[in-house]
Image 1 (cartoon, rainbow, N blue to C red):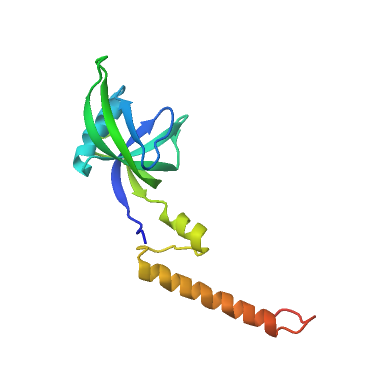
Image 2 (cartoon, one colour):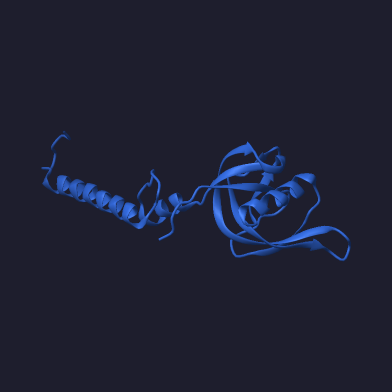
Length: 159
């Protein structure tokens, strides 16, 4: 089972489109903000947080991506090839290396666990034993509720 990680990654805003996990995309480097984010990614093993920019703010969900290559296109524009790795939830941002926006990132595992299993995980880490304990606790609550419903006489008032 996947585990929730919190990372600090440089943010590369996307002005158009999205990059999803598994996609390999070539992006042109057109702004100083993008250059700073790429430079800052060198300190995070080439990882960036790609987030669509919506007006003057960022989306709450993005994609952690790995910089595969940086170079120039035949037209002379700087470009990079990135590979989308995992979806991520954007945390809080702080000024960081190279004066680029740096964000705490948590992969969207908590919501995936809730969608798949119907339990709400609210503590880190989301290790298999922790999720199993939450499942067992949820099963115990559900079993108790079913037993209460079966034993309740018809027309009885709730306690």
